[in-house]
Length: 319
Image 1 (tube, rainbow, N blue to C red):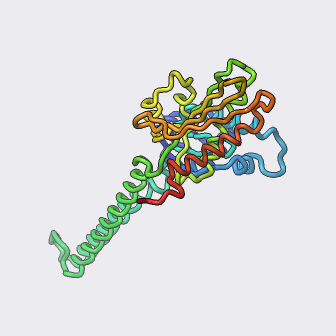
Image 2: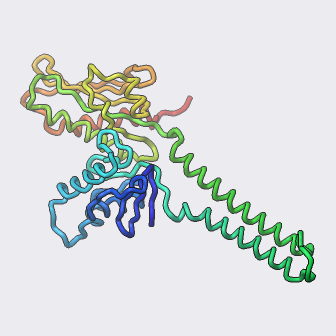
Image 3: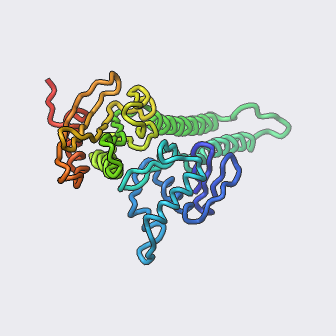
């Protein structure tokens, strides 16, 4: 089947990718990964599903490295980036989603099939009208009432089918491009403000765990954006209006690790982006001996609880 997205076209039968009708080099394994992603555009393709599709159960490889290579090759071929994806979105520790609108060959051809049926019906009615025609005369209209009714019925059926396809196509485009009816939460990379570079890695992974925890609430209930480049800006350079524009989010989750009174102190925020106000702030404090072990899970649990209450209004009764 052929899939079209943006200026690209991909044929999963031959595993060929073209850009504006020009071939784009793509190795067989990344091509197979693309075939799975576009066939399930808009849905989550888990890492396990991708592994089974590319290698099967009987193959033993360095799965993480192989998968990273495939996705990297796909992004290079599509001109995509992980920080600000237009085609392939990474959901940390869960999988991937093809987020660009995709039109398959079947959807593209259905309109042509209806048009062909319409032209065939008209031709049959014209032939029926001329078969009983007197020699040497010209038939300018259907000769009988039945002929006229048959032609009218064919026209009505063809017109109705075309309108149905146009309406379905319009609905599909609208659902892909309309503003989301679910809240979107952006998760910024947490800042290490302790001055201790050895804590950089542990602090940087906290946002990934938060993204994973919030995504598990269900994509139909909440959208989670943790990949946009603007979310990697340091706290001092983070403009709420720019975050809202780049991520389409209504709320921002952020945090920073500091040292306070000889203890490690992680301050967490939920910020409403339309006016930049803090709607939730919480602090976790630990002694240097306790360190950062399991801190990411504690942070993710508290933020999930706050998002449920503030963003999703879980347990909040309307007055």
